[in-house]
Length: 117
Length: 112
Image 1 (cartoon, each protein chain N blue to C red):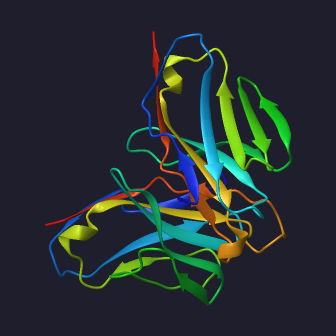
Image 2: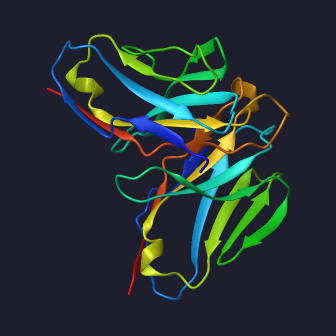
């Protein structure tokens, strides 16, 4: 089954304890992205990757890191989580986001609800 | 002006009625338009995509695009309580390095 898989689904942690949220897709998609969603603020892009070894900042990158060493994986790293990073996180992938290549929609993972105390 | 604007709602319609959801966008060169449905606490789910001016129908859903007016809409016919969700409009922002720009979403409530 074609899907984007995020783990874990729920995570409670304490301030300053490094964590990684994994994301994997099995659709051979070039493009992957991380979003956070907070009440009243909608979906905000954290980081995105146009392809392997090509990552770039989104709208709210502070406090996050990503890597794209393999096409299928795009982990989100919080080196020193803080309470303001408590949120619902989504990983998403798309065949391509290159201009005029294709009209590719985003496919979302099931989400990770993170609580930082 | 926000890049993609939607009325936040809530939009309340009776069961069986037509729900009309609207979205405007600011980037004139946008070429791809998507509607996602999101239930509370769940991930967005793609329900419609449209790329050309006019209407596109899929079951009870019809997407309408007017590039001249920079307007895209979603009609849901014979609305059901299970359609109650937040509907997100997304536009491909070619002028921003290629990414989907999401509106804030419109909350739809279908009353039995």
